Amino acid sequence: MKNLLRITFALAIVLCVSVAAQAQSGYSTGIGLRGGVASGLTIKHFIKSDAAIEGIISTNFRHRGAVITVLYEKHAQAFNARGLQWYYGIGGHIGFHEGHHYYDRGHKHYHDDNVVALGIDGVLGLEYYIRDIPFTIGADIKPYINIPSGGGYWDSALHVRYVF
Image (cartoon, rainbow, N blue to C red; front, side):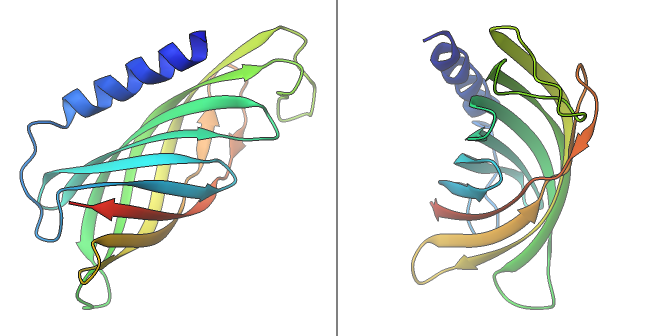
């Protein structure tokens, strides 16, 4: 229950930060699903015509926990194709995991009941906006580093968002 309250609180902060946004040329907000190494919900909101804030609530089933990620992303048109954009960005995450399922880079399991993981994230992706049906589809790679436990990791995923 504590994790659900933490996730809800973090999502509320992300939404409040993104309220004062300007419209982007294609869409202003998208909500959808992200599937990959870490799967979950994603929301992206443009704060300028070429910049967005993305919030991700995900789980890695192997580690049995929840991770909240917030990213600042810069967007640009890709390959002179209408609706296709590439983006890159940086942000951070906080994760809550069951200790006996979470392990560090050396595969040493934690024996604590709960593990809190803080870290820095990067993202590089490609997204296509389908104007006829208000959806985007995309793929990204999201390298991250956990600060307390050390080690770097790679996350890659596909996403689909309904946009408005």
